[in-house]
Length: 124
Image 1 (cartoon, helix red, strand yellow):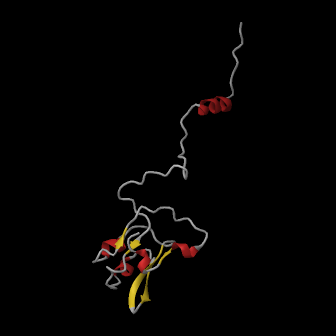
Image 2 (cartoon, helix red, strand yellow; image 1 turned 120 degrees about the vertical axis):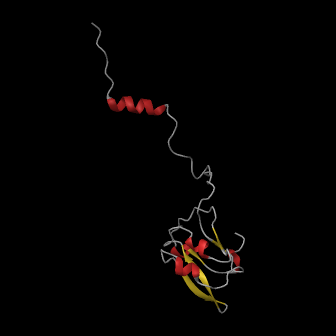
Image 3 (spheres, rainbow, N blue to C red; image 1 turned 90 degrees about the vertical axis):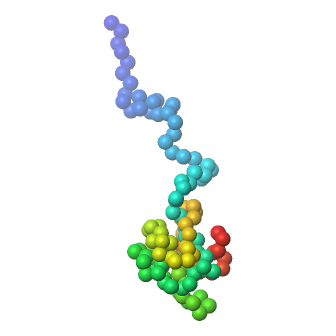
């Protein structure tokens, strides 16, 4: 009687995984397709802002601070506190705050996670 060779369960699993498609994506070499409606980093257009402060008032995460810029109060966004609910954009009567598809926000410097109200922000 021929003896059946038994493969250990772990070895069987390893062999079966060799021929499967990888479960992970090849990021960052291959950039992911960002879905429509994705809520990334805020884009602030200072020219549309009327300094009403509704964005800071309605921010549930308290991630928006109103700061003085050329004599007017403008929003300063703290992305390290933001929950990306975009209530600020909904509250803005002039559409000065828009979403973007920028999702790569990782940084070792906390100051990189601050969106300052200045002219360089518009059109990004």
